[in-house]
Length: 253
Image (cartoon, rainbow, N blue to C red; front, side):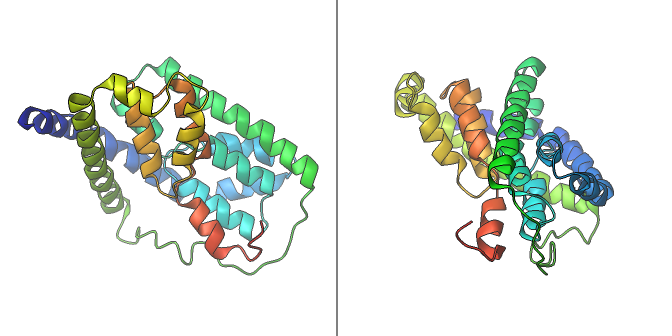
């Protein structure tokens, strides 16, 4: 057990510098480009799903939460919102980069998610033909971003938070894999069956960025297949679903 804890701790400490730099860059992008992203997306509703899918690749669930508020105010269409939900990967990209996963694999996953985001986003808009509705919901009023103290402190908080979570998840996975065995864990997640992606897709619906962390860690530990990982990442949109349920006036939507 001591060796498992020590190995998990060392693995977590190694990624702290990378996480901090990554979150610092993300904070800079979010603060500098938020308005520009909004203008680009709203410029043309027809290409909204295309732009939304590309911008949805930005790590963390912050962009999907912002997009949810833009949909609630009908600034963007439902197709664009779904395209962002499908393309966003929360913490997956950061974790894979920090653990030096092959860039070709990362690009493959991102391109698949972008592809599905564009296709289904366009189809949804074509079928539903959503019309712009006037609503007075104030964007980000209730999101409590906690970035008023500066991007460095905010990035540090994100880094500490995700590092602690990664440590806990990694420790649990290491204990399970060590004492139960990868073969048994693989059977639980039905890695070699068509039901694997279905199970991980349900996990992806957990309204928290922890879903993407768990799925990514499971894949990196060879506990789930690539198809199962993508299935879970497609349904994962972080806290965006909670914002939609809480603030969207039409609950049927």
